[in-house]
Length: 493
Image (cartoon, rainbow, N blue to C red; front, side, top):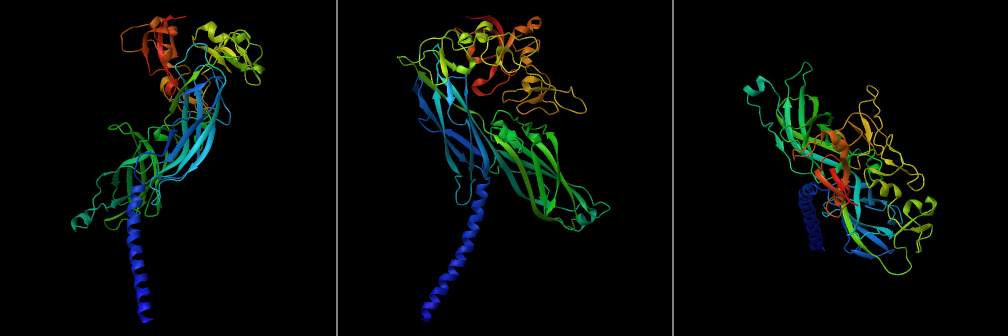
């Protein structure tokens, strides 16, 4: 019996010794959790959607979601939207925005959380012309956090400490890697001012942030609106960061872009500390933000089938008769829709895609009546609306940038706008307002009105436009829906 007790005691001792050793290994593994430059990763499931479907067929868009970063996603959203001709060619049967949550990486799950989302879609019509494929764009919007903990040196700045050799650490610049998040703390510079009358030294840290995830940034308060088409993205310097050292909250302010590396933005965090001797301690930095993944897309082909199905386009019955979509014709459509002979509205056909379309609001002086369905108006889209700014109400214009920055509209300006709009320098794209464009040396200064923002797929032989000069940086848009600034040499019927 005595030997039995000794054996049990030995096993218990070995267990606790092993536990200490395992705990050390977990600490090492935890450092692996906070590495990498990714957060949410979205990919399509093979065969979902299929590469080809039959006209009027239902199908699914299946998406795999993975959280490759170190932070839990508590309120994420994925948006699937059809981009291309014929807004009513496809009908997403359930919501086109779905919510999700995913755990981040941990010592027990270094791969991060995983989930699948399915979107049920139905094809309702096809273009009368042969189309190479139909495109769906997919983005994710989610809440995230970057956490960086680094050992720094606090070295009292005084002649006395230098004379008696109390320096035990160095305040060299610290270059960091990644922290398991799409925004990374890349570098830290430290400055310490001599003791003040209070007996405390002022400690400054220059914190260098960089967007390393390939996506866009939004405020934590409204990132979900971006996935609903109402919110707006922000610049890296608008991210909110906080810092703490020796249990002291630091004051952090943005400085601006780093001149040596414009991809990085500098913040200064400071506080007053009593530093009696040179020593090391931990600086904790945290940034919270909303993040928008880079748009991915799927392209699929729709094959027409023989029979009594509508061979043209099915429009909503509440839009009225087929007059703006040609004429009514025989052919089956889903309930609540009717078969018409034209896949584009009378507005688009009459104006040959010269900037007119069917919109809720119109630019002044461009209205062309009775050429759009329902309550929509045939006109050039209204870009303009003044940004709200108490000091200068005319400082900028509220613009629909179609998911991009204000660069195509002359740059960002201070001021607030309604959801879905951004405050930019001017109301129309640079394409339609600048006098000289491109690097070809061609000057069309007297013919600015011949410049339009058009899809790249619309330019070339057997396409709607022939362009004498193009540039890609003066029009808004995202992904395959990005537009190019075109000096229209001719319109091809």
